[in-house]
Image (tube, rainbow, N blue to C red; front, side):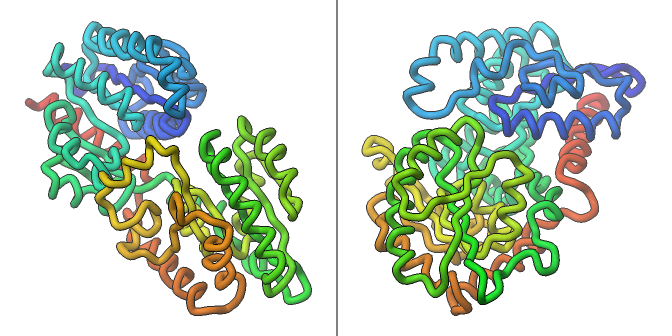
Length: 393
């Protein structure tokens, strides 16, 4: 291991674009804390991490696949990349390995590295959802993860309870973007003569879009007949699904405005009066933006059996952070146009249901606060502390 004055070799392994963004910010914060001239980054990442100086072992697109069928089709390549990555880490003998999210890939790499080179410290950035299902994974992680960096405030206690590795809450990256996603004075709240602004978010995966666009469209048809005021619909679409969303929306009775790119997405969030959304990180984005919402989700019949393994009281991230089910969630057979409208309609005017969500969202800042540090800065500090303790040892 390196001493205090020597260079530091850090391997970072991400498995998809969101991990690439986290890795980029971590690298930037590590350079600010430890000195860019001391650090050598290698691993697996995308364009963001490469711009910060990472030499990626192979293109991130080799492993960044979503959906059961897509994974099966790419499985031989993924397994080969797991072996290749683990062997490269062991051969490099870095001062530290950081794995980021994508546990199906990164945890297999970490297990192989720990088996072959137990002296390499391993940090996991982003906790698997052990608090929701397969809680036994937490205790198993102790064998190959020395420290876990959690994005959600309830996760350290969950890992303590489940026997997981030492865990620190470092804050969600959305905390760094509050000025982008929250409205300026007068930006939200349509005047009585103006249409309401409704966000529809059918998901970032093709399987989600294919299952939710039809019931969402049918719900809008019903809502058109009973809404207290006319409404406009905006769909922020991820680029690779924009064309499919546009095609499926042709069947809708309300013509939506489909926007792409983060700037347009956050503008739509700041102006929205309410939202109909697929379950996912977007629910936390909406909560922090202060947009009342209804959440829905549908899975395949094969995946439906997994619901019996889910231990959490909700699948909505905002509900989990709040510790109560403030946001209605309509899952699988409950995701019908009629039930979606029944849940959404009260959010379009000043009602107890709307006020309850708005009041709850005001508590999110206190629940997710981490002090003066940005999440990436706190993560970098803990990484540096792990490095320092290993060097002293």
